[in-house]
Image 1 (cartoon, one colour):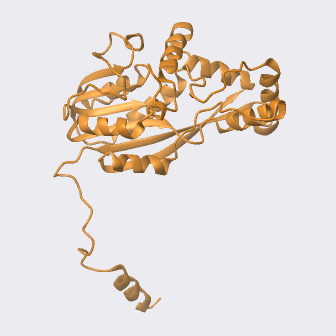
Image 2: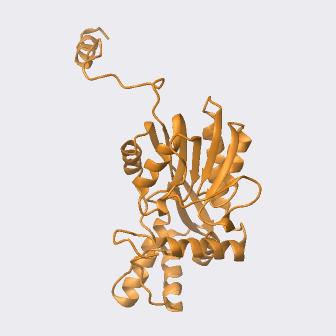
Image 3: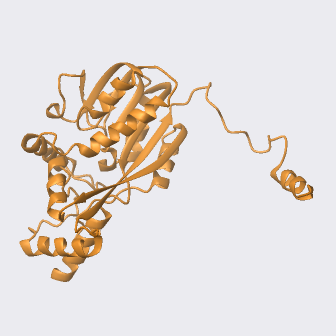
Length: 297
């Protein structure tokens, strides 16, 4: 596939690494997806609605679909992934790139997505397609990596490379800020948009354990702007030393941060709550404050 001049991520390389990770490691790197799926189940349990058709989109495994099924909130559940190798017979399958959804407008009642949308080159366009695929009063719930994800690793790699070679190439992908994600939901036309963040710490004996998990997730560097120069043993050894110096606990184990930005929004429907028009309030804040100030203590 030809590179888009505005593309940040090499998504063909991403897919190749996801296939290789599944082939070599199975689901050994799914612990973050499992945690996100537990959170998804809790969020669905708070929704007092039953949905007809649900789609688990670009969630790299059965965890999201299983969470929807266990919630009992959907009558039919489909899984959508870019490649058949990422699917299984447990659910009806849709082979589709999340950046080019083949879903008909207003055809789905619930769409969920776990830990993939931060690796799209056109996240606003992807969210717009999701909103258009939802029937009126349909719901989208998704999680993507937030800006604090792997912040320790990013800083250590920059420091090690600057020390060894005098400069640093991008090694860890940029991640979104929760406030920006809330704005993207609004731009995509979602009603009642909400974005919040959950942060988790995973501990390892050394940075090499973190590297093993990232390989098992297929989560290596896919930036188009990445350096093609092979990294040396000296570089990795120095990263490990800096990481241990800066981010180790008293027992010697190191910390790695993963943050999930949770997004939710509804396809607009006339039954939903709407904000009051400016000037329509029957009492002003100024009047309230004046009255409150005049009351005795």
